[in-house]
Length: 352
Image 1 (cartoon, rainbow, N blue to C red):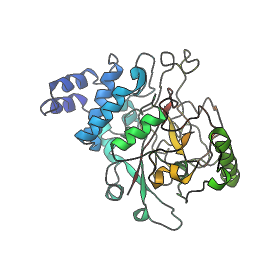
Image 2: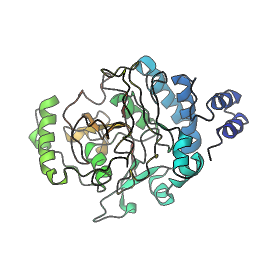
Image 3: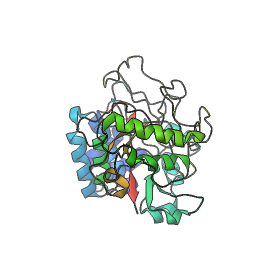
Image 4: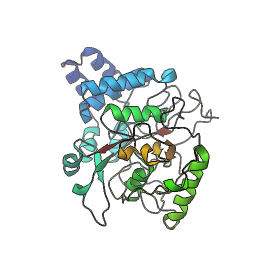
């Protein structure tokens, strides 16, 4: 079984999207993406998937295209095609799950959540101890951007670009406590000890907040989105290229899996791949006026969350659902020089 990409391309060719896109899609048929495509061509396929499968509007897509076009070096996408070796194609991933690509995508839909969140592939965040899904005031993308099952996550994206891409769709970057709640299966109130870091900045403030937070949640150490860690449950069994030394674009393949390839890699609230596949950018506010959840667009400093696609073989750092990281490659989120690499992506959140 497999998704009829040729048929989809032909149907697109009969619409205003034009025959050129149909030809591009046909070139990638049978492999999920095609071996000869450039990064720009693969991004074009992804943009059309976002419109066709997730309902991104034309005006939103224009903004998204402009952000991709302005990205330095043109690296942003699903990995450098010259060195990336995805362990599964979308068709192979879907077949392992017992269906076609289209069937697997449909199986991930949740009509109740669509009514609450207003679109496909988002999940409401709430505290199950006192609330139901309908009480949620924020939703999270079910998968890493572009938030479509059976599509590879976007990497080589700066934190500033991630914030801009979320905003292009009327969404936003999540605050650290929201990502942690999505992973742990319980969204708790904000817990930032702003009074302890008043007058501080940079690593001093981050380390103070991090130390307080990790001590406060020490009892949950070792608890992941899937509970106790089990190898093979999440998208963490890939490999790091032998040529990958120092994280270069030319040497490091983004050897990720199609989103949703591991349906058991699901948090109690229904967020997938929050462990594994790509690591994720997040906003760590150092004051109340830097909280994305309270409307800030200036935002705080960068935090990189989650494990990544080789976590079963290389554990580069400690990690658990409510763990906060050191100030690795730290900067303000909206800095034009914020960090990017071959296994770092993001997901968006939406206020409702």
